[in-house]
Image 1 (tube, helix red, strand yellow):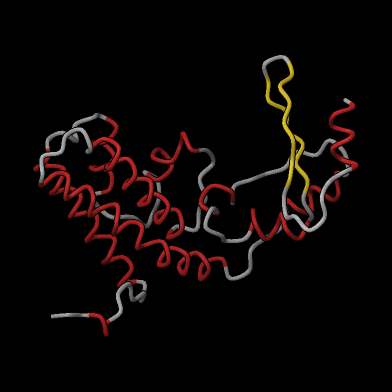
Image 2 (cartoon, rainbow, N blue to C red):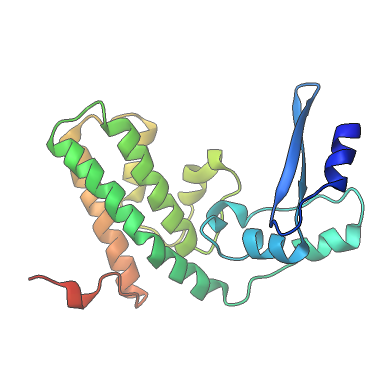
Length: 203
């Protein structure tokens, strides 16, 4: 394809990623360029998107040895990097959880569906990192997380609330959310991770 060939010849220097997409017979085909070092740093290492990108596996069409080398990359100090990233992401869980509880308190039924899903997404990211296990696909976040060894005891109850659509029982939702949030805090504590700065304690 002349358009793709022209793009390859004019790939700009100094950029980490780039690409172009074309639809062929209803299928999106993308040409993405990067370097080995940037691919490993951005996709296989524990970054902010590792909870999904970390499961990435390449299928070689050419250069089998090179692609197999990329697929065989193993992150050093994976556990510590994941725990550090989980603690760093915790403020997202805090903010999203507070929004759900505020909406429940205000009986904001229109806001609850989106707020609950956003909160759960951040909790699922933290759960992935605590278990050092990236998700295979967005559609399997909940089913995969149900099998995690490290998770709040009541997380499955919250999953069921979302899956079954019963989150409009605001009092039950509030109880479940507070329970799961507190259990996450306990897990971090058991792992020796301080989530909060004692110097900022106003009590």
